[in-house]
Image 1 (cartoon, rainbow over the protein chains, first blue to last red):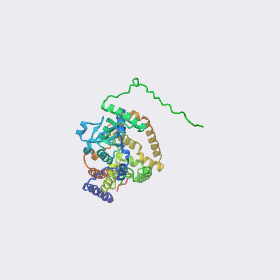
Image 2 (cartoon, each protein chain N blue to C red; image 1 turned 90 degrees about the vertical axis):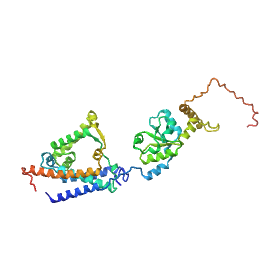
Image 3 (cartoon, helix red, strand yellow; image 1 turned 120 degrees about the horizontal axis):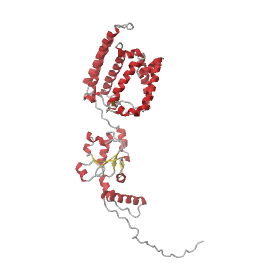
Image 4 (cartoon, rainbow over the protein chains, first blue to last red; image 1 turned 30 degrees about the vertical axis):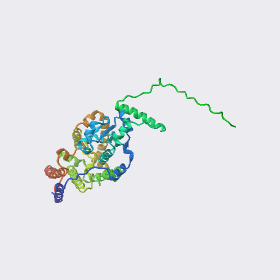
Length: 203
Length: 201
């Protein structure tokens, strides 16, 4: 046998044996800090309570609501079809199956949006995409969807449309009766204008 | 640092450039190792020439041990390296068909192109046959799709399956390779004794 082969074989065994002495390296997968910074400064991760309400009412199958409050709070009140993942167990392997499902839009919510935002940062660092935060959390939900405030008379038309939608959504979520104005009962009001003075002057 | 493309150090468009460079070097090594001769390749099955086993086993253990060291030095993130998903049934049958092709045709797909490159007629026939086979496979795929995807183990590695670290696997394989080199050398020596065209040193 060629002596060179023998040397090469011994060198290979020594190199491979050396591997047994070195520790196994664990690489933790995270997104790059620059990318995280960029994403954190963007407001695009926030969705409004109206957007969430609309998706729930429409039965959008891509919506995945995640309640990051403690389980006790979740059991007391939660949004329709929400999943409870308390923020301290977000990184637990048991819950990873709920995140990162293709085509699903994950929306975190809490009582406000501070904890939900923290959950968003954790999930973002773990490399999940399509994750959002419900702006204002459940406090905002109650204020806007459950007990909407009628806009002032001088408010723009869009505000009234939004109010109509919120009233409908409130009825949907609380099961309250909707007051439909009866067209037959409301009499036609005739507005009489006072005759003004004849136009004086002119051409 | 690496792998370069998943880490976005270079863009995915470099794929083809890198593939071209690796392909050219791979072809050169195949030809230089004598793989363009179908006698060398079919020799594995008759026991007079184990160069295929030696070259591929060497490539495997060098790449394996090298990757482990690269990972240790932090030059490559081993978790980002693509691992081919294992479909057990189709891989077993595929391996059998490939072996059959090896012994009948005297080439594997890669070596048939090195044979084409040096103008071998049997290599040209083999390469054309490869394309005919690919065409038939693609057209008939729906017929055996269920078999093809059955027993899907996902991107599993031997270390994960046995529950040991990759380093131990690399070490054990290196030992197996070197033992195999010695055993095949003994077999070659015995088989070649009666052959006039081989002079054994």
